[in-house]
Length: 132
Image (cartoon, rainbow, N blue to C red; front, side):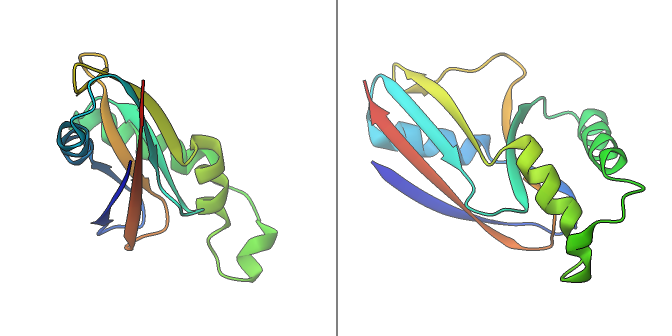
């Protein structure tokens, strides 16, 4: 089963909690046990699991910006977003989680985030659920 939804970002760099949307897709699937793949088909965005706490979200963005500071990227001669591509590759564009009893299996503080690295943009999120 495959479902999609769109998320719009407001800033160049942004963490957007998509946990509720993913959980809604899982519940709607009626699949009791299996796996869910969360995928953003964009080379300038990523998917991470982290706590939804404002200070931590600011820390994530600060670390990501620091990782790419002081580089003279060759790709920037084309469209000035090499940092976004590099960070997306480091973070990854997907995460796979388990489903048990029609619910996502995740830790107490684990939320699912779209990491926008080249916004503002409209991003497509693809959810693939595999029945156990």
